Image (cartoon, rainbow, N blue to C red; front, top):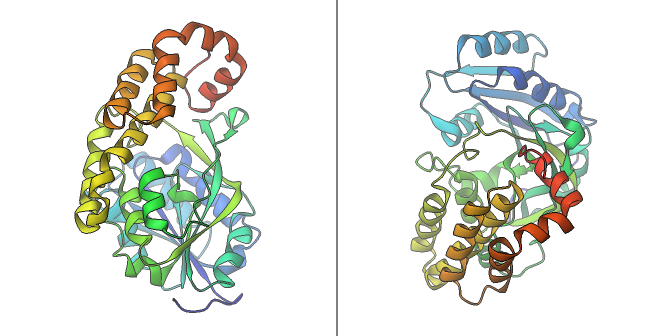
Length: 326
């Protein structure tokens, strides 16, 4: 159990930035516009050596509110390292994370704070989110997230299902953050998954089943244009399973689910070849994954009819992830 909350608790906001000059001010304003902005004691932005145009924006942002502090880094620390650095400047019992190109809904903190306040065993609150391409909020669509909070074995459930817990949606108890060992600065891709796996061993999670974030999809994001995501998924899975050895036998099942989801994502994005390759990998990793087989059959043999029958849905989803029209 961690320290019992009260409605007098304050919250610090951790933000990161790297060449996000066109987006960072809107992100900060979404924090300042919170209906519970009164509980925010600090907004710490850790910059990872951005170009001069972004630095100029950050200088202007510092004048928006006395609670804002910008750490101007030399670069190379990476996302997890900068989050940890920003956390060292915070003393509040609650921490919230916001990436420099995302936007909170105005009621984000208002809806999440009570879940930490009323249950000392909960260390993290996550939420559903909208996804949209670059500047087009009109194309935003709710992602839909899996509720794993009622499972008795949170670690096993998260390891197998890996629901999308987006860092910008979370409100975190600082004691739990420290107990889990913070973010691992050596993990540069899926550092959030690595952290949540460790966190699942020290506290329970709670969910606000409503979108509290607008998540911007950009091909220049850390994972946006990468071709080696499965290798990074494998690294994170084996890294954690080496500590939690009961999970080693089911690593292939976890990786099959990751390959299935990547395959489905590629199909939505119009990349049929990439979808088929990932879905075939999923069936090889877990021959009993019926959903992977179903998606593979559709992508391999029924892509044309599927696109025709599901055109309105696919068009909306492709627009939301910035992948053009169906």
